[in-house]
Image 1 (cartoon, rainbow, N blue to C red):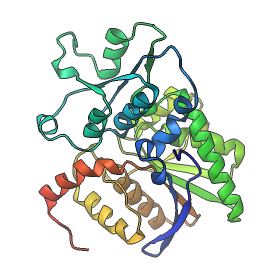
Image 2 (tube, one colour):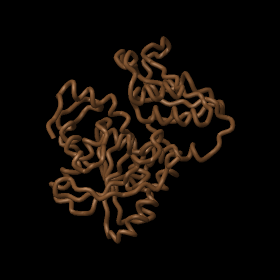
Image 3 (spheres, one colour):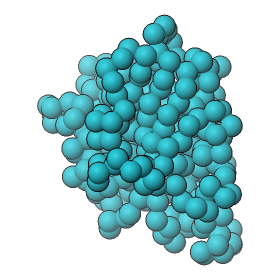
Length: 308
């Protein structure tokens, strides 16, 4: 099971050379940042745990990876979602279907009579967690201190590669959900190699939401990565023609990217180049390609096929 030491490829997007850290080539059940975030759980034993508890979107990459983790460890995964779309339950696909196949118990909170207006995390903390050591709770997207050891391994790989390539200064760019990977990378680089800076953009919520996520894990803002503002406010999971176009443009690199995070990431990176960024860039490919099984049909239904 490959969970570390992925290759770096050099590609061009237009006139710009970009290095791509191919974490999408990690084991498909833990592709990309989930392999890094969940490395601690994979590498350590938890003899008392029987129940793994998480929450998020019914098509979240974390849902699939947590289901694979639970299956591997012999645990039951209870994964809470705000609501399950009827179309998805009638036509299971992508991460949702893969998680079901792994035995995940996906719980629709909109059907819970005791929800009392609570969001997913509050419901779990108030209604589900008992304090028993048989329960292991992983916050949305793996946003917890347990993610740091795996991300530290990723940082060491990048520092080693940079040294071997004799690169004097480097920007590591990645789009963020909770921002966990970006934050822990920046903290590591400040110690291992301060000539590496992390830049990221907020895909889930806005820049203020991302800053809040950083602060929940690290109170010292001086240790936070740089947030690159997007050209306009985008709503997570909504379909945008510029995202679809960017995704098609990325085909020229010869690397497959996903449709939820990567389009905004690359659009923000292109904006940085337009503003004069001339430092070598390493784009962190965080996997998540299984999500294209549901996203691509949605784009095709709305915008049709784009000419290459």
